[in-house]
Amino acid sequence: MAYGDTAIEAVDVRKRYRGKVALDGFDLTVEAGTVCGLLGPNGAGKTTAVRILTTLLRPDGGRVRVAGRDVLADPRAVRYRIGLVGQDTSVDEVLSGRQNLVLFGKLCHLPTAAARRRADELLERFELTGAADRSVAGYSGGMRRRLDLATSLILSPPVLFLDEPTTGLDPRTRIDVWACVKSLVGDGTTVLLTTQYLEEADQLADRIAVIDAGRVVAEGTPDELKAKVGPDRVETVTRKPTLDEVFLHLTGHRPTTEPS
Amino acid sequence: MTTATALRDTATLTGRVLRHWRRRPVSIALGLMFPVLMVLMFGYLFGGAMAVPDGRYLDFLIPGMLAMTMLFGLEALVVSITADTAKGVTDRVRAMPVTTGAVLASRSAADLLNAVVGLGVMVATGLLVGWTAQRGVLPALAALGLLVWLRFAFTWIGTYLGLLLKTPESAVAVQVLVWPVGFLSSAFVSPATMPDWLGLVATWNPLSATATAIRELFGNPAWHDGGWAARHSVALALLWPAVLTAVFLPLAVRQYRALGR
Ligand SMILES: Nc1ncnc2c1ncn2[C@@H]1O[C@H](COP(=O)(O)OP(=O)(O)OP(=O)(O)O)[C@@H](O)[C@H]1O
Ligand SMILES: [Mg+2]
Image 1 (spheres, chains in turn brown, blue):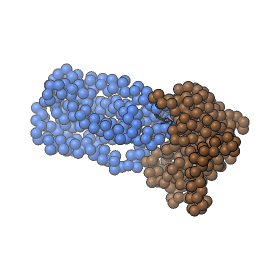
Image 2 (cartoon, helix red, strand yellow):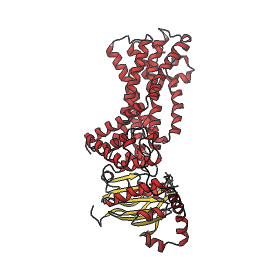
Image 3 (cartoon, each protein chain N blue to C red):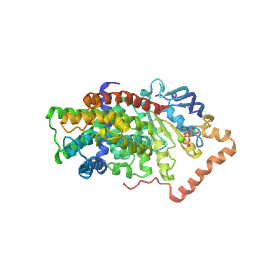
Image 4 (cartoon, rainbow over the protein chains, first blue to last red):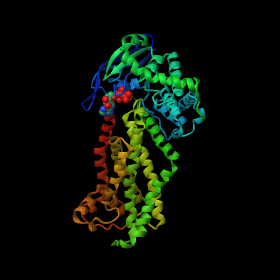
């Protein structure tokens, strides 16, 4: 995908769950090779938007294109071109990390030998080699998250979706995830990440879309948004990252590697 | 999407379930031992009180337990499918280029393999306690075929229920329901010994059709009232699973697609 192409395009997307409105005219455009932060409080519709963009959920109305394909007309083509890290980890807990990567590699239709090679590469890259043959049930939260990320990157997808990738992680593991996202962007991957923290969006995103009650209420670069959004809103979303900074200051900035 | 890809996906996903067994040998062993314990319990504990008109109670019980074993597998299948949904594995697979057919067929295939192992253990148990197939190899193979055919139908009920129930907690309901369905049949006693209305339900239970049919094929004591259902048990044992599959396979497909709504 060339720079300047549109990687993600959602127009007037609507979704109700049994009468309850989750998305109410959701519009979003993300240019290829950029990071978009979808920022919003609990229940704003972030997960619903991600699930629709990743073919998991059918919208009631609207148009959705991802990686140059129509999500509703050709979900299969989209599935070859996206990676998804859901809000909750979604790896097979009974299997080992390596078995997970080989399994999902085969389901992405890599030949078995290639799936094995790719698994080795990803285990190495996400510092899971030592734990590769242990059952995921014994992994820490941070290790699971890394395996989840690795699984989503098997096909090196041009578009990656991360739904609250750092919620529930300690601040140091959060820094690890941030570093990973930054390196992916360096390789040209388009990233849509949802978050409840302005700090996180500020760190990673080229542009931020603020979502509330199922629609995008503000959109722009972090600087534009800080100028545009009312001070009371900024106040409420920035309080949490400030605490993180204190924690980081106390624990040191160095990313940790967990025992394996 | 080629058929070869769909078949490979089915094999990959079936292999995943088999790997689960290797990592959980104790729960698999317990699952296989359970019907064996039931044979010992019913055969030796209650067996003395059971008078089968034309033979030993154990020879009546073993085919009944073989049919019961087909039903017991249902619960493990439902729990396994709900666990995948709860842990996000179902969604991870749905976000990959894998067809509905491959996902559902792999569930059925893995469960049938499980059933074949379970049958092997039960037949061995039967032979150890002195049960035999009296009418030769071919009718015996036909009987085993009928059992697998019944289980095939049950895999679709299990897949449908697993996708419908969504959480492992609600899957416990299946565990509870399996018992009345199992006992309201000719697996342990003749429906003729039950109160009229219960006997009627038990006579027409799909499990009874298979149990009665395989008793006939194995040449084991049948202990039935000679009614229409008993006289046509082999036909019913072929028909019932076909009807159940025709109903529950499309329901399972529909329920899987409904995950996107
Ligand atoms: N399966 C569902 N059934 C019914 N309502 C739902 C369902 N999923 C989400 N909702 C509702 O839709 C709205 C949007 O939910 P969604 O999960 O998309 O929000 P979110 O921004 O991801 O929230 P969070 O930050 O808590 O993850 C909420 O009001 C939620 O209660
Ligand atoms: Mg969410």
